[in-house]
Amino acid sequence: MHYLATLAGPEHDGPEPGSPEFDAEVARYAEFEQHAGAAIAGGAALYPADAAVTVRHADGAALVTDGPFTEQAEVVGGFYVLDCADLDEAIQLARRIPVAETDSIELRPVVTYFPHENPGADWWMALLWDRPDAVIVPDTPEWDAAVGEHKRFGNEYGAVLRGGAAVQPPTTATTLRVRDGELLLTDGPFPEYTEVVDGFYLFTAPDRAAATEIATRIPCGAKGHVEVRQIVDLGAWE
Image (cartoon, rainbow, N blue to C red):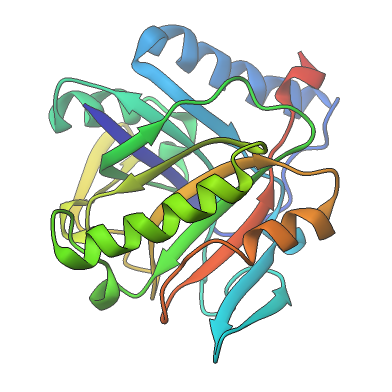
């Protein structure tokens, strides 16, 4: 079973690429990935949220603003998709992700997952956010209608799509932290967020403007929004 592990915490300045601190951080994640092996079904690191674009829809028009959703005190820094037998196995694996020692990880069962290859320099992520009370439950008429909208989007932009996922409602989420070696678990999504992750797309685009244009076409619901972030090409630092 697939689980989306969303890595989040306060926005802060990380080590500069090429610095010893950056190399040490990359090495810690490489060690985790070597340990996890085939259990890692996907994942990526994101550029800082100050370069994000937020897209909302109102009265049939797309409203585009620079930066992440302003009501969020914490931001998503990256993600993994874990292939585990059950939630307990996913928790034991996720606790070894380095960010768990300083920030938080949300685990959520995946409804539909479209695997991706290693991200490149022209890859972008569209995080789909929604109000908890507006999240659509799978296997309902509303879910089927939403799937139809996403299929239409996929038919239009299939040439640039590289992967994606839809997740179960936030009531299925587990948030974990590791402090002084102790695993701390909380039922539910990140408590700091007024909205919850509802899924994501990965796609290619030559620049921020083109990525934003694609994001305006992604269905996100009347209360939701799409957050567009560029993916870090870690292959450039190997």
